[in-house]
Every structure is written in structure tokens, then in C-alpha cells.
Amino acid sequence: MTRFLFLIPLILSVAWFVYLRLHGWTLRQGLKGFIYIAVFSAFIAVFYTLLLWLTGR
Image 1 (cartoon, rainbow, N blue to C red):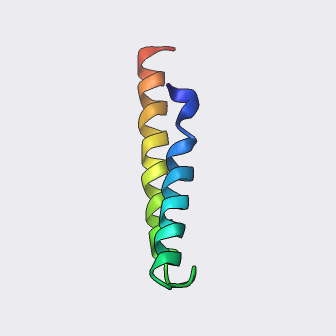
Image 2 (spheres, rainbow, N blue to C red; image 1 turned 90 degrees about the horizontal axis):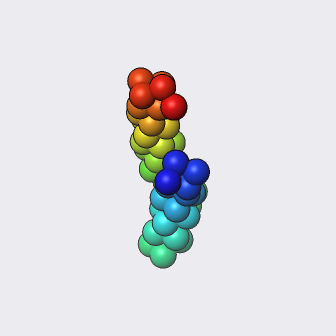
């Protein structure tokens, strides 16, 4: 399961890119969304790292 976690930011970024293109917005206008995706993904990575460290795996 954890080996597929890299797909979360990838899928979210592609979905956000498609959304921007469908609505005629530029990447510059959608930059804030990509930042939110990066922060959300970093939070998930830190959470799972902490869980793995606490359980001793």
C-alpha cells in the first residue's frame, strides 16, 4: 500500500492540470492549487513516516 503513495500527488496534479485546461486557465493562475497539493502530499508523507517510525517497521 505505501509503495503506491507517490500516486496521490501525481493523480491530484494531473486532475488539477486537466481542470485548469478545461476552464481555460493558465498554469500561473492555478499555481496556488499545485502548492496546496504539495502541502497536502507532504502532510501525508510526514504522517506515514511518523506511523512507520512509531510502530518500528
